[in-house]
Length: 193
Image (cartoon, rainbow, N blue to C red; front, side, top):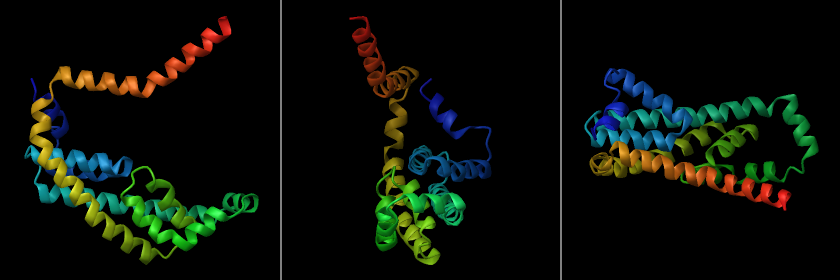
């Protein structure tokens, strides 16, 4: 029964080409999670490690450059002009001066990529420079994350049972929704008192 998650992740009905396509598409949503999943799959020998890491690298670079392109498009819209007129311009000026450093740092700080890559397009940083920075940092970060995940793959999958997955999901739900529920409880208690 402990192989249920491995079977789910490898999606036995998918061909190797479909699995690679799924990894590439997954990087557009959450690239680090897709990279970890690819590493875990490679650790279980569900996919060739070289193909898996190549898929997440291609997807990561393509997704990051798509954000840059969206920023370039947004930067030329009337909405962007209105926002520029209302704002002080300090963020935009800072991104123009230190944009490539921000792009490089964002690779290693999950959660910062969307605004930095989009913003680098909005301020029209050099496409070639952004591409080179994205490719260089991706070639460092993604294989390292993949390697750690693939090495942990066998250990992680051996420990996963339906009970441990349910426990992890419950703890995650508690962490995500617990503070909200507690705040709501306190607010209703204050109103009643």
